[in-house]
Length: 201
Image: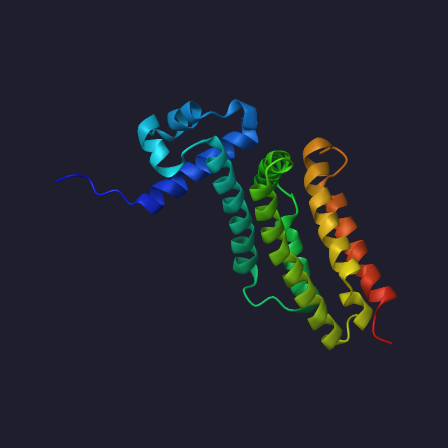
C-alpha cells in the first residue's frame, strides 16, 4: 500500500526546519534547495507546501507567534489582570535560547516586511492580537483595584508592546547587555510604574 502522508504534520515539520534555519543562518542563506536538504524533502515536493522562500518565511513567522501563544496558554490558559499580563510578556520576551532564536527569525521577517505590505499586514494582525490582550488584562487590573483607569490608555498599551518588541532586537544584537535579568528588571519596572503612578487611590 502507498504510504499515507499527513500533509498538515509534514508542513509543520518543514516550517520548524525553516524557522531554525533562518534563526541560525539568516534569511539570505536559506534557499528552497537548503530547506529541502535539511528537511529531507525533494525540491518538487517542497513546492507543494511552499511555492517560494517568501512563503516559507511567512509560515515560519506565523509559527513562532503561535508557539508564543501556546506557551502562555500552557502556563495559564485563563490569564487575568497584572499576573496574567506578566505571563504573556514573559513568553514574548527572549529570555532563553529558544526565544532568542524566535527573535532572530522575527527580525528577519520585519526586514522583509519593510517593503512587502502583505507581511507588514500580517505583523500588524499578530501584534494587534497582543495589543487587545494587553488592554484586556489591564482592564481587569483596573477592576481588581491594582491600577487606576488611566492605565488602560492606548499609550500605556503601546508602550508595553514597544518595550517587548525592542527587547527582541536588543537581546539578539547585544545579548551581553540585554540579559534575562535585565529584561525582567525592565518589565517589572514598567508594571511597577503602572501600580505606583496609576494605582487605585
